[in-house]
Image 1 (cartoon, rainbow, N blue to C red):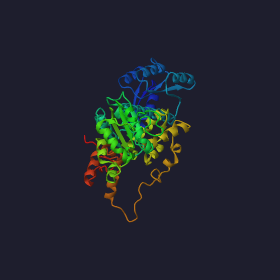
Image 2 (cartoon, rainbow, N blue to C red; image 1 turned 45 degrees about the vertical axis):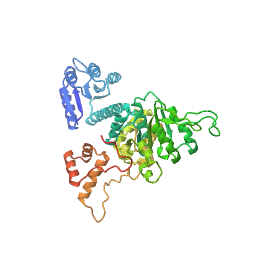
Image 3 (spheres, rainbow, N blue to C red; image 1 turned 60 degrees about the vertical axis):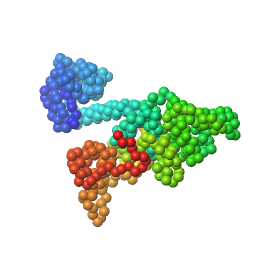
Image 4 (tube, rainbow, N blue to C red; image 1 turned 90 degrees about the vertical axis):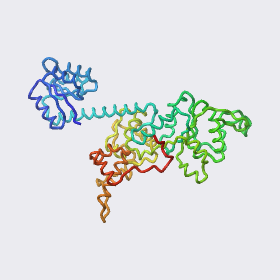
Length: 462
């Protein structure tokens, strides 16, 4: 879509020169011969950029600037002033003008000033769009994403949040499993009660039972007073069992009883206590595989996984990366920070083994070490910038010497485009620069369909 520019100048010859140069540069230009005419056009449909002469009969440039800013504060105004009256142009900038050019000016000076203004407009538009998308996710705390995979996660969270069903969240480390758990809690009727988290892999085996269920004074050496466990602390709320796949086999029957009966028995006690809790568990292990290897009780697994939610790794939803970068910049005090295109390209190509957590850590480090608000490829960590995927030799394909099937190559390219776009056909078609119906034809021709997810429990059917 062409950028729209409004030119206002009472000098017909200069107006024609401005209009010709900007049209030739590819902009959509409208010209007006007076401040009053220009303001009338602007009132009907505000323009993102206005170029106006300072001195005009009737409504002059300063009056026009004030009127334009009242209608559209985000519109940028470039003032044209005669040589020797720069001080007036400076006053205009103090009043809200973006920049000024002095007569006589050459074509390059005009186009450079306009290009800088429009670049700033594009950045502001993109920032507003990203902020709106982040605001739309406010119910999900800091969960961020617009990819097909994350939209499915959001849909499941909405459906199950205000139920009592147990939830098992699976996914690699760093994908945001605890954020999903907290989002479920915050959208439930238990949101005003405690959310209690415990990492089952971070506590020594001989202390884990006491941490979960509590103990009585004298139950073991060092138990000098009664201590409530995490389940009691979560009474009325939600308990989050992180890395539940690491739970020792000997504790699993006691956890299963707690889930079934909604009661716990502290260490050293023979009297169960009723507790009202909702359980959400998470693991980065393939528990279904562990069932066959006797590493996890099958009955406990099915009790926990009433609602399974699988979080995809960041490498499978790279279309969310730009939104995540913006979110983390705002979160860590860098709301004005931007990444240039080469830096973005390298970040997208990196595999992110540490997932979203690794991405956030990188952003926080970059914000601390930055020398400006424009981050470039040189600012990006070496492992991201020089990763095998991020290297670019200017050669897209490395074909074998013996030759390669064009149809097979086309099939691989279409599949890769779909994978990159999260199987969003419109996005994949844009990436390939072809119409969507052409993409669909290629998919049908080669029988290209999404691969079934084999890791983690099956997603909830909607």
